[in-house]
Image (cartoon, rainbow, N blue to C red):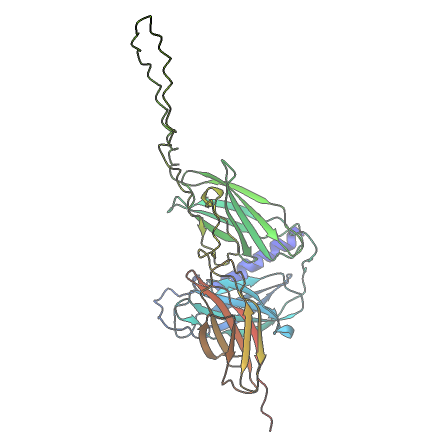
Length: 413
């Protein structure tokens, strides 16, 4: 099996990556972008990758050169376009999507996202996957390969963890990765995060300089976890000096007692009470460890940083989770009822951002926000198929949008 995978790697490097070199890595081009809502991405191209159940997608920036923070790529079988798609959030203008069904027509939608101006019309195209080795949903995924942890040369509190999918043993359907980090000296967990299946890099910030850490990367499927891939790294810089030891209590002074006359007995003096010892220092708070991931699902702070009383408030340090159970139900010929549920009530959500598009043209017909988990759209065109997206919003940004599609009934003549 090794030779076919080497051939595949060579094909990917020559055929797809070479095409991607024509586009800059970032969502925005090198030229200055304009502060406006992005238009539809241009020249969406899809290619089925031989000997795999994977596809590659490549596109150009919106024609109006608007600033784009990232793209949402939605992938689903074309025959089941109304089903919940598999979302991929990327900053580049290309992506490879794996673990698809062989000989199946897939629909791919690419949505540009501007944090300031909202989402733009999406570009859509279809492609048929080729015959190839499909994954086994009941098998254990292969262990992640080429796991590295590299300290940042510009920040002594950052480490970049990278890995590659397993190309040999293990035929399980990988749907994501779990990365965990620990302080090597005391085993305290500093990060625990679930990432998408196309993510192969994670920046961990807020670590202690000059400190050794252990990181673990685990591939996940719906059935099992892969064996752990581990790596150890020491952050750059000088480790902080240990706190000073508390000052020792002064030894009690022996007081010379005045000897009274022998005929007058005097009781022994009681030992002076010792004051309670107070530490001469306060323990330093553990650093606020963060990551640069936009696909964060779960995150844990070091044990030493946990307050004594766990707050009941929602978390405001991460982006909200995507809304769940999103549905679109027609109400008459020109109305649509949208409803959804909070993806994670433990994360603060300030509002929900709603966008609606005509599916045939990609034109956005509405962009609004609401503080509720339902919304009714009016004045739609009868007999038209629409695509709807809803994203949760908080101070850290927008979630990956949930999508739903539905058609308004046609006018009866």
